[in-house]
Image (tube, rainbow, N blue to C red):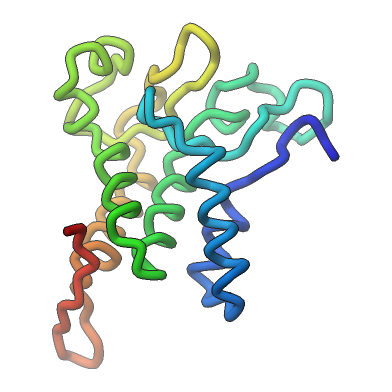
Length: 175
């Protein structure tokens, strides 16, 4: 019933990553994320929505609405949602998010690149959703998000894994 923070991608994504057995509810959770948190127009995957303005959500509310964790894209979480989609075999949707998260792909579009304002070779910590700043990147060279993205591409998308000295490859590729 809250008017702020009604949906958060972290519990939705971790339901899939942790192996939630109820597949119907799991897919409902992932569908809700894709419907309500993925802004395809601006290429942003929001951490949660709507942003906090009145409710005291701790340090998150120190940021204006749509900036960093307060309703913007927090790239760690966005990568975890992408991983969750690959984990449950939703390869097309996982790949769509991979493309959205790839800074080089974002910078290939001249309009998005201008708004983004960061390097095409560096993973951002966040991307804003604040009106008038949609798509502006923040905190480039964010190694935590870059590390998770690297791990997601190799392990979740390409399916490259090392188990007991043996290499296996089981990709989740789009058509």
